[in-house]
Length: 112
Image 1 (cartoon, rainbow, N blue to C red):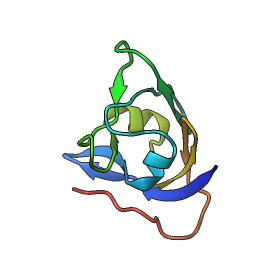
Image 2 (image 1 turned 120 degrees about the vertical axis):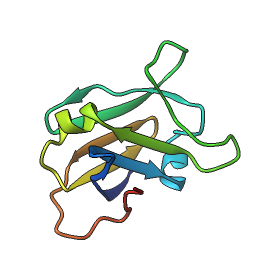
Image 3 (image 1 turned 180 degrees about the vertical axis):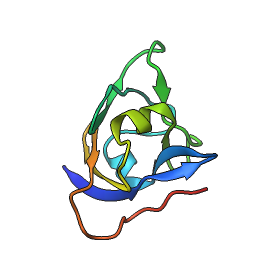
Image 4 (image 1 turned 90 degrees about the vertical axis):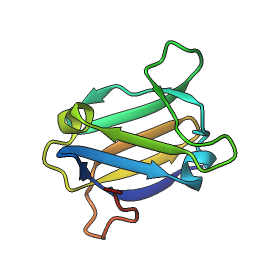
C-alpha cells in the first residue's frame, strides 16, 4: 500500500510547520500514541515507526480519534527552507516527505 498527497508548508508563530492528520496516517500504521524516529536532511524527512520510549517523537491524538503529526520549527526549516509545499508518501510504517514537484494545489492545509 502506497499513498501520496501534497501538503502545504505553513507557519505557526513565525515558524515553518507541516501538519498531517487523518486516515492516511492510520493506514500507514501511525496511530495515536505510536512512536517514530524522524531523521532530517536538506530536502528530505523520513518518519519511521519504532518501538520503545527512547524515541523522540510520538503521534498525537486521542486513542479513538484521528492521528496527528505536527512537525514544526527547526526540523522543517532545515529540511525545506524555501518550500511552499511538500509531497508526502505513506507506506506501512514509513512516511517520506520531499519538496513538492507537483503543480497541483496542496490537498491538506495548515492550521494556524
